[in-house]
Amino acid sequence: MSDAGNPFTPGRPRSLWEMINCSVMAICSIGSQFMLEQLMREDDLPGPLSLEESMKQLTSEEAFKIGKWMDEAESISKDFECTAALERIAIIRKSLARGMTHRVLCVELRVLRETIDSGLNNQLIYRYPAEKARVFGNWKSDWEKVIVAFPSAKKDILECVDLWAMAHPTASVFHAMRILEHGLRALAKHVGKTFDIQNWQNIIDEIESGIRDRAKKMPRGSDKNEKLKFLSEAAKEFTYFKDGWRNYVSHNRSDYDEHQARSVYEHVRTFMTVLSSQMGEVTTR
Image 1: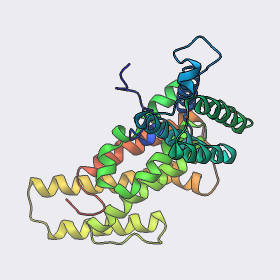
Image 2: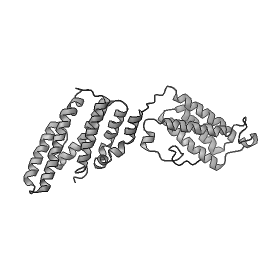
Image 3: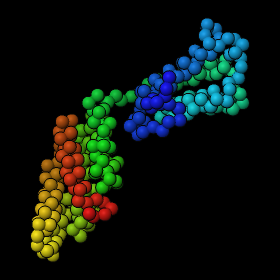
Image 4: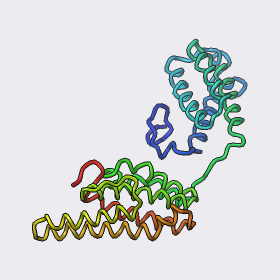
């Protein structure tokens, strides 16, 4: 069977979406593979290996394949802090290096599976609801233009969407306001101001003053009108965000449910996408 499309093929690079939080698929995949390798080598069952064949050492190709599966098992064990499994994997690696028979590998895989199963006891695993998983899975593409223009906002964007998907809507709104601060800083820079420690109202006032100063220096024409319109509307949007959500979530004045939080971050995404068409944190376009 081809491994094409299998996200847990040994040695295949994995995306953040495949590895973030925890992946039940990874656990199922590694467990199934170990069971398969084990059953192929059971000498007390009428299987593909005879007793004589089970006493033979693995070929270099077989040892390499098992080593790759050990890489996957090690990654999962680290994610779940399964110390006993990591210790068992280290023992298997040493045995592979010295030369291991099929029969010994069969025993080792059974012990490793049992060790991993034991280590997963009492582990807490969060399952994203289907619709939320879909939204979370698309966060990079949905926010692509914003991430390109404001790369330092990427962490807050991820946390904003992830917290919403994990049923922490108020925390999601908080991070949405942090995303806006990247845009507020860029807008301030665009009109010759610096957003540092000022509160939002003060920097918005400074930005509006900068826009008025810029209007006096720009030559008349449609370009001036369009540019000033864009800047003025952007400043007003920040006022709306400040009065509508930022002041409440930052000063513990309000909680939000998942529908309100989704509405907030969609407003933020739409606004930041538009802002990204004219400016970013590195260069002003």
